View 1 (cartoon, one colour):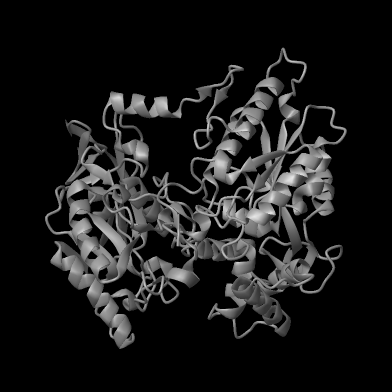
View 2 (view 1 turned 90 degrees about the horizontal axis):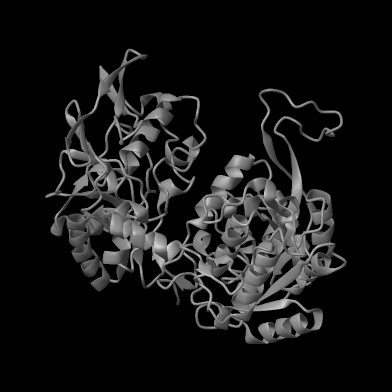
Length: 602
């Protein structure tokens, strides 16, 4: 008989209830049990104590600044396939004691040429409940091929992969691996994080001698500094002298959870309060230099068009802003566009596909690799790349394609420290998006990158833009059973799923951006943000013969210290802005940071 206790938090202010689910002979039953208050922010139910007191927890990167974070449960690339409840930010929290011990281990690993890469640390009880609820739905097997291909989902409780409680919720357990500073790659442990199977056992012998030695190195140093391993998972370690061996915490994974008193909360709120501009509009652009002309222009514009008494007032329904992605919101090239690097990996490096790639796909991918290494220019590569993306991922469901993108996003940025590919958003421009949304602007992304790749980039990111407001280059979509039958003759049935059809339709650059805005948005935007001549037509369309006051901003990549800048290209953009009366944005002079102070170029 297996017993599953399933915790569900209703409220901490008045009362908390738990649902205890008994798992026996395939039948489920439940009853309610009251939580009893036994101390400040500490509650008890049966044999378990639960707490929302975060006062003994710290932000891991405050203690170990060079730790690499790949918080899988904040993303959708995990065994569930969704962001997990309670993971509000992609950060790692630990008890002070566990963080101090881990710092000692990190120092020793540093001396050996390694950095820590963290997959998970403190895990709120609400997240564990999410796992349990998922496990009860035996039909949800979206991620089976990635994380439990050898197991039937119905045995996950029985074999202990899912439980009602987790040591992570006690705050002194973490999941991690090593990053080799010489090769700039994750150390090969002979198995992936969160794989359900014998392969993940630390002492599994069906791997190479080097992979086994790597596991033993990780384990020996962690044990030396006070952690104990888990026999079933090579990545999992718990502080032996954990300060809360009997308490399960249930506050969200977020920086705000670490605020322990009213003055802390007030200080944080004060930091978030938007600055008052001369026009009286609230300004949240804290990553911008206060003397920035571009910032002043934007704030003044928003103040004018959102004031009902202003002659420039724009009704909410008509406040539409369009943004390019690469080089405008997101790192443009490191060493190439995200979607170019994705295709290069898929065709030349992905062990599940590289032997199946077509000659055309290989030709395109090799051109991209040559461009990455030697800065070679190839005429027509934009369209050939679009065709190769369409064919290389043909047959994948939309969800499978998104999961592939999420996994690629988790790779370290080749040219930067402390940043993954998916984290490479320009923070000052993220603030611009948030600022506009706060004033009821509808924000669209209009990109030359494949539409579904852009959606994957934005999914589980710091930008809150729904998929319906993401426009990009397009490929065909069809039913998995449709074959070559024309869509006019095929009827979608209840067991059909949508897959990538393999045929490229359009590259959404230059004039094509204007056309697709007219087709999909259906009205002229009033703000445009771009960074290249590929965005010129879009910017001109926004400011030409507009019935409302409109503006176009262009980013100039003039920062060669914090970003992969190009001064010559930036100078040309400044000249174009002067010619077209666009507002230039200087990465070097207008922004106080680009990716965050802890991110540096290699």
